[in-house]
Image (cartoon, rainbow over all chains, first blue to last red; front, top):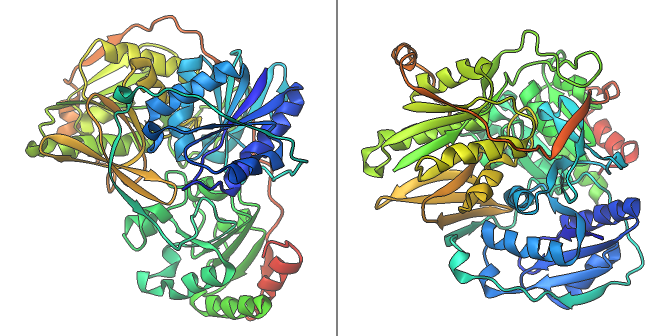
Length: 322
Length: 249
């Protein structure tokens, strides 16, 4: 028996997300008295692979094959399913990010394994295997029993702290065959964002709503984000109006995020917006309306005009960062 | 070319969710049921593609797995413009069950593009679309934020962490759709509502499938502590609190 964790890499490097996954897998393995095998697909150097051992992976498998250069859901599913079988995995752990959402359901059908999706803490019990997950877009949480022999968990980003352990990991090459005729995804073009902190990775997010009044008013908000090393986000009306791109939209139908600090500027805090940000550790609200529902979700608030407050916050942040 | 859009029936997104006595279910009293927001956007894009003759998309069908009580939601999809509908007459138990039912119904017909919303706003599983694809043994593309046509072939944009990829993929495939696919959901016009009454809904009986998961109880999120207000005349104090009290910057 083992816990298998799929660790995604970006151009050969792991991100905090990958280490979170391994830390989580390691804690699940402890609950089940078993060990963690980490699987990495792609061209990743040995030194980078070994880092997974710092978070509790005992065995690190690297599957490298030219056919796997781009994410093809069927080809990746084949590889992960094959390894899960060989490793006799009873739990398979994947991120709940775009890649995880693409792979977990295919694996579920392949392995006849129930999925606990978007889990944010350890299983509540090992027998029956019960997980805790958000439901109704954060308006409730559900206790879900996974009845199948093999279980798949997708972990919500930024929901589990890194736990370092002494590294005693063994590195192995995973010998995988990929049938080229199976790879149907043909990537014609890639457009990468560069030089920006990704919203889903960010520890701090500064977000603007309709209370910002005009797309021309975003200057001081972006400046505050830059000073804090934060990503920028927005509410749905703002992206619907085209003031900001839809990639910035956080909320029920946009991105679901869980940063350490979420600063909501000119956002009233509709249920649909809170559904995307309520897992943030701290929420700060800046709004002219003292009765806005965002203040019920926030730990810190300022009632006032964002255009006057933001520049002063920028100055204060620069002062402490000196 | 034929498009199928899978739709889920969910509480209106502004609903205050109440947990029923005993915590095993949600209190559905007074809940307004709507098409899951991502499915509604998928349907809108599917209809735009059908209405653009250059794409070669001839029809849009909607499929739903649920009891007769969810028919108003299916009628709404027909009123918005779908040509016909399939309803699998089953009480949904889990995502695996629903996906298996949808796949069985889809197998009996020929669809080129199957669209599923990336998530449903009730159980937030994000798995049905991918499961349908795996049951059917066809490709899937996830986090799709655009579908266009070039020379009669679909061209897909998928979001990846930190960017976008433009993809060609042969039909049939499942597109798992997120925000951005359509600007805003299409709204039913009076004529559409009248027409919807006579559009066909095919009822299919479910196949025997054992669900893999079961919700045993619900709980409400723990309440947050009260908001601490900082005087607008001294915003710098906020930064001090975030630094020294919350320790997050």
